[in-house]
Image 1 (cartoon, rainbow, N blue to C red):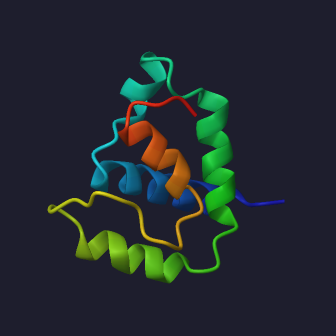
Image 2 (cartoon, one colour):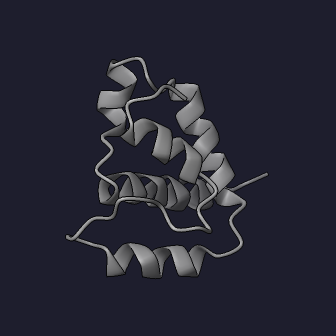
Length: 89
């Protein structure tokens, strides 16, 4: 079982990734493009990442400047791509 600290850390990474990509997760939920359960699944998928350090380095490098796509190692890249294009996931 994944502990609470790990879940919170990866929830933060998912949120930071969304912010970096210009995806407002709350807005996407309100628009009906993202189900809250799907967002929870994204956080759990993130906990299985084998390159959390690389993700954090990427996020820090793109802080304030943004990015058009998630890095290749992101397990939620497809979700973010769909949401950024206004497509449901």
